[in-house]
Image (tube, rainbow, N blue to C red; front, side, top):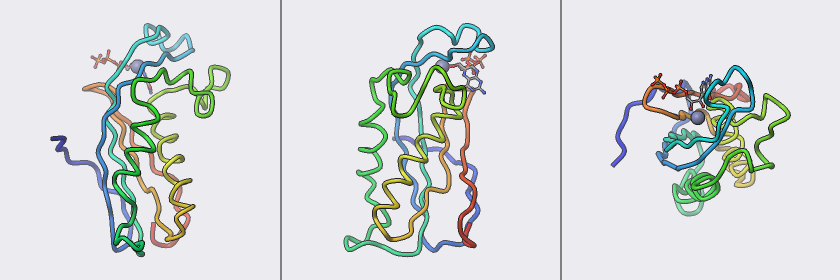
Length: 147
Ligand SMILES: Nc1nc2c(c(=O)[nH]1)N=C([C@H](O)[C@H](O)COP(=O)(O)OP(=O)(O)OP(=O)(O)O)CN2
Ligand SMILES: [Zn+2]
């Protein structure tokens, strides 16, 4: 069982849902500054995704936990992130598969799905751990007075 405490996202929504998941993926960072990380290598990424909102759907869900796993785990598990041209690129540093960019990408994928649900749910935080000593927290800019 994954159990960990995370920094809290600040908000005034009435529901906050958190989904933990892991996925194994390979990547390389195509920049000289990355040193040995320029070479292809792998991680077991750990992600915590925070969603908040005021309105539940017809199933009583803010968003289905299993849908979140499907969107992220099923897409990236046992993949080479650099080969996912929809999300990452070797030509644009804002799209290199760094911890920062992968965390932002997870948030964007989840938010696109939430936007289609129509209940106003928001992905407020993605905590992404790449190694035992390195992690990133991505929080998108607020779009409502709740955030
Ligand atoms: N700001 C960032 N810096 C680095 C990233 C990154 O995504 N964002 N990535 C890497 C490497 O890809 C590497 O996987 C992680 O590096 P690091 O934490 O240095 O890994 P170690 O296991 O060697 O850490 P130690 O604490 O020294 O054991 C590099 N930098
Ligand atoms: Zn790495």
